[in-house]
Structures are given as C-alpha cells and as structure tokens.
Length: 456
Ligand SMILES: C[S@@+](CC[C@H](N)C(=O)[O-])C[C@H]1O[C@@H](n2cnc3c(N)ncnc32)[C@H](O)[C@@H]1O
Image 1 (cartoon, rainbow, N blue to C red):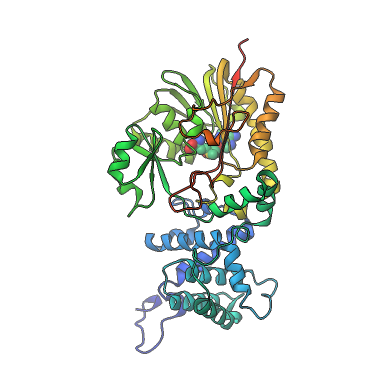
Image 2 (tube, protein in one colour):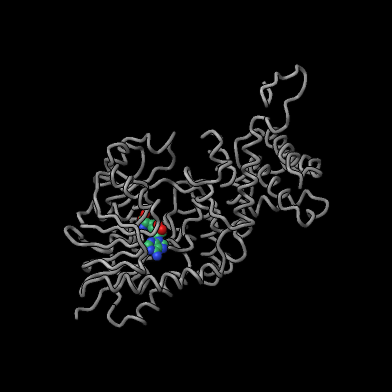
C-alpha cells in the first residue's frame, strides 16, 4: 500500500521517501548539522524523552543506527573530510552545508560501519535528492562515495591520524597544557571506543567474574563489550551496580570514610556520585537545578535501593538550615574529558565556552564553601581535561578563601591511581591513561581537588 492508502501500482517504484533506511540517513544528516553548525549537544538531541522528534519517531533499532553513524562521523570527522576532499575536483560550493553532511553520513557508514557500501551510497544519493539544497548534487554524491567505497581503506585500520581528527581549538589547548606528545596521545585515545565501567556496591572481583569483566580497585568492574542492553545484565534489576567511568568514581573517594556523615552533593544528577556516597553510608542531600535530571537520580537510587534527600534547586540560592561535614561540587563543565563517549563535545565547545564555564565554577564554589562546617571537607570536581576548569579554578578558590586549605591526595590513598595525582596533590586523569587508545583501555578525563575549611 502506498502513502494515503492507495494501492501501489505494479512496476512503479516506491516514492523515494518511503525507501527503507532513508529516514535513518536523513535524520543522521539533520542531527549532524545540528551538532556541527549549531553546537547542539548530541545527548540532548538523542534523549529518549526530549530528543529530536524525527529521531524519536524511528524504531529503536534505527535510532541505534543513527547514533552509531553520528558517533563515527564525529569521532573520525577529520579523516572523513580528507577522504571526501581528496575525491572532489573542486571544493564544495559555499552554502553547501547540507550536502557536506549527507556526504559525511554516507562516508561514515562506508569507512566505519558494517553497512553494505551499495546501501550507504544509494541512500546518500536518495538523501541528497530529497533535500532541495542538495538535490542538484546527487551525481556528485554518487561519484564521491562510490570512489571512497572502491579506493579507501577502512577505519580504524585506515590511518586515523589523531591530529587530523582533533579540531584546531582543542588541539591548541592540549598542546599548550600537556605538550605535543601527550596531546597526541590524548587525541589518539579519543578515537577509541570507551569500555563500560560499573561501580559495584561490593565484591568487584566476584562481579567481574560473573559479568566477564575485570575488576579495577575495590569498586569498579570494566566490561569491554556487552551483548544487548545494559539493563539485561546480571545484577541490574537487583541494583548491585551502576554505570560509572572508573575516573568518575575517584572524587568521592577523597572524602575517606563518610559513614554516618552529612554530605551535600550539590550538582548531583544523574546521581553516580550520590549513589557512591549513599552506598558508603553517608546521609546525603542531593541537589540539582534540573527537575528532569533529579527525577532520573531518584529512579537510579530507587533501582539501587539507596536513599538520599533529593532537592531541585540552584546552588547559588541553596540555604539549608544546617551545614555539612562534607560537600561535593561536581560542577558543570565542558565535558572534554568524555570525548571518547561524546565525540560531539569536540565540535560543540570552544575557547569562549571554557572561559565561561571556568567562571561559573568559581562562582558556584562560593556558596558550596559556605555550606561546609569548620573542619569539614569540600571536594571540587569536573570531567574537563582543561586546566582552566581545573587547576586554575582550584588556585583562584584558594586565593579567594583564606578559610580553606588544600588537602593533598596522599600517595597510595587512591589505590592504584597514584599516576593520576599531580605533584601538588590534585587528581588529574586524562583519557590516554590506563591503556587509553587501546581496545578496552582508557578512562575519562577528570579533575578533583580536596579542601578543608579551617576550624574557627
Ligand atoms: C557534571 S553533572 C553532575 C554529575 C553527577 N554529579 C553524577 O555523578 O552523576 C553537573 C550537574 O550540575 C547541574 N547544575 C548546573 N548548574 C547548577 C546550579 N547552579 N545549581 C544546581 N545544579 C546545577 C546540572 O543540572 C547537572 O546535572
């Protein structure tokens, strides 16, 4: 049956926009445009409830394919651009943004995914044909992608040059802060798929054996790959573990024993660190300004059988009737430490955004610090690899708050992670550590500093 309920006439091709798989490619090109041209976060665009409506209309299997195309298209954007450019007689016309996105979506499938080349090419041609701004270039799309399919190697075997796949703004910052060699290793780690890390309530060795992973320290289990959804794994329904990168599990450990203590978790959602604190016996107040994220935090705690007081509100206006023995500020940041999982971050953030976020973090530290009892601890953390949002904010905070002193992380304190403690005792992870760049290796980039409020 054709559209509108009329019977299809035999021998007549189906209208182009009904072709199986075409909607997936159209949505992928549209979302790629939103990321690259409008700096929209892929997490937001692909959210199951609030994401892009065209994506949400697709079957789950097709949604997964859109996400796989976008992840590859962004992770290897530099290589894909070079492969396309090498097969163009002249540069794409200015104002041909949508044509470029169609080409990138097609090339990403050919170079990175297990999609038959012929399907990738034909659907890219149909995708261009259905877009009034790109329709007259359908022939070019066909020629370029056919040549890529015939001539190019396949990623990741095709030389996936880390420098080429790291946008200039980010590369300059990495080189300035880490030097060219480590910058290259970090950019290289961004090209590898991240493993799945779980934080377990107890018995990491036992859970590693049951789930076919490996234990890292006492509380993390690393899985290289899983079949099917994470919710299908043993221990999910009974709340034995939650997904949390091994680096993200470190900042809470800086509080030491929190059993029975009042802890304020001020940027708490979706609650990975709240869960760690609650599982360790703390009396946690979890605050976040986003009501939808607080809802997710509550669902997560519910599944895990853990409890915390949960509040929706702004740190800047938070005025509880008591102070806390410990406060965690896991502040909003550029998330450049998570590019392995969120390759869009390299294209949605820039120098100005980093400056803005660093200033916001310092602002949020003032009310956070005021909520700590004299003698209590404050941990400031975030998942940026940029020192402007880490070490510089910590230094500015200490300068502004003579009532606080840094409590350096001691050798051996973070079991197995001494390599990630800076000479002045702050935590600094970057994704090339722990075998980053290799399959099943690496960790998120994180920063954390611990301060104590002087006794009055
Ligand atoms: C990095 S995420 C926190 C991740 C969380 N700690 C975890 O481990 O799952 C930052 C959070 O800060 C929240 N946030 C940003 N600005 C805030 C503010 N002014 N007051 C309260 N929450 C804020 C965001 O809604 C976001 O959920």
